[in-house]
Image 1: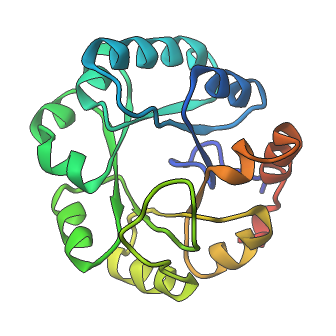
Image 2: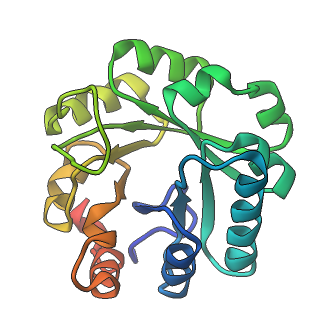
Image 3: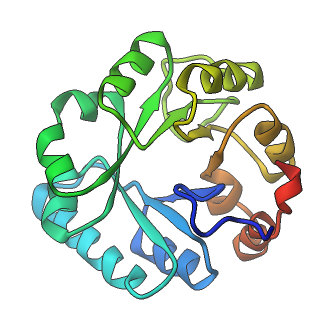
Length: 208
């Protein structure tokens, strides 16, 4: 079976980026699921960037996941949304579901997992798996064994592993039970991002 499964959501390779330029670049490379995580925008800015990103991915195989800005996602007609725990607490889940948005939720501990599952998510993200310097984290690295534990607890809900993961970790992460790997710095801070993306996209399914 080719990698990744284009019918899956999220795809097994799941890059997270912060700009329209990155969305365009990844879409042209054939990436199937792309999360747009642009921080500290007001409502108008959020709506503009989501609208622009959707215009880029429209008609392609790329699925655009909007991080945080659920109101903009609804207004712009997005189909996929990701919320952190603070965003989840403030979001109108009824409005999100009525808009037909698929929902992914971040988790770091037992309480957050319970909150995520109460929202009936389409996937659960666990992180950080390894140490990461990209954002200030109040949680220690989860480690690979936590992936197996989380997957047993959530059952058939897809599990996304995130945080400090590089391509070289992929086989072990998938073997531990992750359904998808969210990648940030291994792409955006790579000396040759396009080559790295192609490497991820070419990972054979049996590596899982």
